[in-house]
Structure formats: structure tokens, C-alpha cells
Image (cartoon, rainbow, N blue to C red; front, side, top):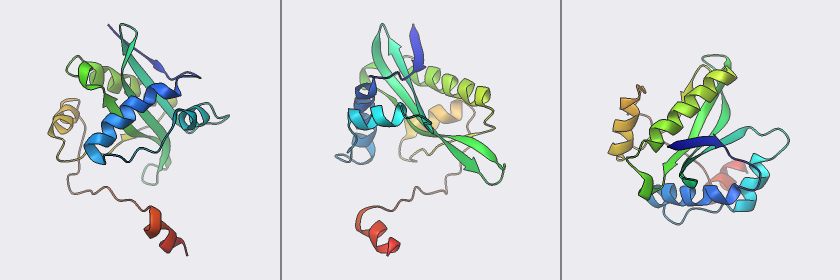
Length: 156
């Protein structure tokens, strides 16, 4: 049985394996976060982020990390799913489906009209999974970011 519940104080370190799984497939070696970073963020007085942990037989199998965002089109807050990760040993056991269902229930309970997230087109397993749960996709969108020297240069 898959048990899903929100991350609790003292569980920040449990997110690190999921973070590394995602980073290893997207940008190996890019993880800078620490358990202390997660503890500070998820237990702040007014967090804008949340995380759900999935366990099988008491062992953490996956996680979904989300944050509040805003849709100018809807004129309302929405949920942005930052990461959905399942550890390799627990894949194909319904963990991702259970996590997405829990994320959807949370979004509905909070009154968010939409959940947004990005999927990498080369991750065909994820794309097929998201299509299977009824997600709409715009394949022409690109993930963009600024960091490091480019961020600093633009900020000058």
C-alpha cells in the first residue's frame, strides 16, 4: 500500500534522494540544496511551497514538490508542480499515480483552478504518464532560466 502525506518537520533530508534522481536525468551535479535548506523552507511561518512524500512499507518511495504561483489569465493563484520523483526501486508500482492524485486533491481543496508543470520532451515515460492522466501539453514551450553570470549581468 502507498501512503502519502505532507512532509513533516525533521524530514527535509528525505527529499534529497528525489532531488538527486531528478537532477541526474536533467543536470547531473546541479544539486546545491541541503536538508537544512528544505527544513527552513518547508517549516517557515508562511510557506509558499509544499511537499508530499510517498511511502511503501514505511520507506520513502517518491515525492511531489509544489509551490503557489499566479495565473494572469485566470486572475487567481494556481499550483505549480516543481518536481515529481519516484526512486528507481519503486517505479512502475503506482507511486507517481498516487502522488499526482494527492496533488490534484490538494489543489482542489485549496481552490486552485489549475496545476502547471514542465515535462522534458525527451522523457517519454513521463510524457506518456502525464498524457495518461489527462494532462494537456504544449510541446513548443521551452524551459528557460537565468542564473550565475547571466543573471548577475542582466541585473546590473
